[in-house]
Length: 64
Image 1 (spheres, rainbow, N blue to C red):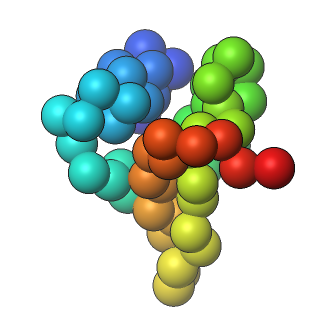
Image 2: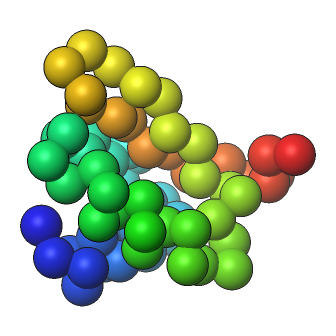
């Protein structure tokens, strides 16, 4: 995964084109770096799963 691909997936998630994005362990650091660089990063929720897999969802209300 590249930073551009991560940003595209985050935009699709925000726009409702995707319900969730699954990020594998090897892509987590890059994806998280792109995510935390966004102004709206508090609208995204990451749920840790097995084997380092993380599922991201978009929330209408920002988390605290």
